[in-house]
Length: 347
Image (cartoon, rainbow, N blue to C red; front, side, top):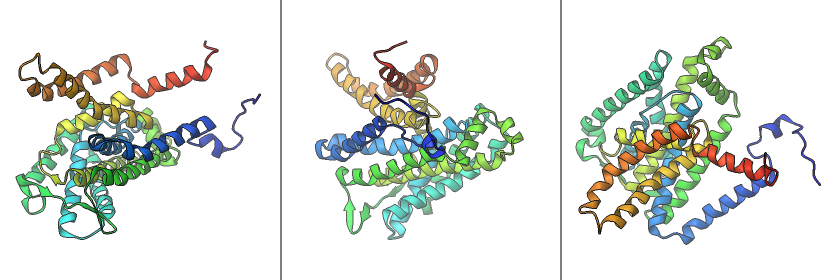
């Protein structure tokens, strides 16, 4: 019988995966990701690509709101910056799609730094209103800077090109988007093993105490905005290559509410929460659509109800999780893990 022992080194204590069971689950999950495109049909591959995009953006928002405590309703606008950057570069340059996506992330990070400047003076609801104001300004720019954004018509996006191969099918895009999202999630998980990530957490828990301990608040708050916006910009770039067109109506305040709902439902301040929350919220409309299809023989004009029902469902999920499970689905998963960890010796 093996006896559990404490970790003997700091590296072992800080490891992301500490047990063989966790490595086994990770290996199984990697196997599922590799096998998925060979067994899923085109519709489910479409959803898988959309989940990858939303997980990347939700992870970025979780860094800002969940780990740093800075409430933002501008994630959709930052995604739009990345999407427009990619669309413009795809039309004007012949750079590889990975370079375009990286450029989209960097431009969005720069805009995020500008938007984050008020965060030193305001926080909470006031900061959320400030990010909404920034979103309105960006929406005005997208609509009126016609020479760059195409105005109300928007911009068409050329297919992503990888070593001479155009990525036009969902099967091809899956192999581009999923590895990018995996790298971003792993990067976020490792971020909070560093001094920067721990400074973010200290600011969230008690910003005045963090400043007393020598953490420069403005620098780290702007850094958090930059990292979060970079994630949103990369996700927006993938979105542009996915839908092949970008317009002012592509990213509204509803998109920002969607990502805020995703991290609340999934669990703020948890990498796993961003993943499961974005996945769950992406699949909710499909569940609702299935329900509407079942109800269509009995309810007249049931299809027209799908959009308002979706909005109501998002609001209801936020309220239910805030009231009954503030720590989200990630906490439910942790409870299940703890149950089976102690089973059959329950306390």
